[in-house]
Image (tube, rainbow, N blue to C red; front, side, top):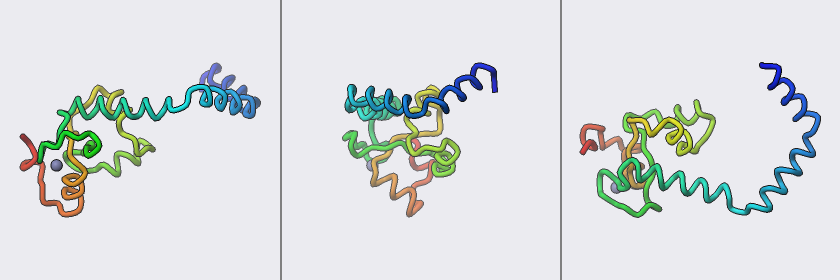
Amino acid sequence: MTKRSEYKHRYDSLHKEQNKATTKKWLDAHPGYYAEKAKKQRLETIAHYGGKCIYCGDTNTNHLTIDHIYGGGNQHRKMLHTQNLFPWLKKHNYPEGFQVLCWNHNAEKQYYDTMTPDILEP
Ligand SMILES: [Zn+2]
């Protein structure tokens, strides 16, 4: 830990209540900020990966999700300590190995394993 981060850690631990109040005040003044940010990140990510289910072509963004092409999504989320992949994908400049699927085809792939990456590749 650097001297600066040690100082910040100590400062934060001594000012927990003040920090909580400041955060609450900011969140009260900006209702929906994080929900809007998350929605925007989700839509940007889906658009980047093609904007439609690569299997059936569904373009309704309410039906779409990001799939790990070669599996390992649960392990990846555990490693990242989050269920929300969208910020990570953006931060890593939308790496390969992900695709857009509708929820039905994502479930079909996950539970029935009937769709191999070879079938899904355009
Ligand atoms: Zn589909």
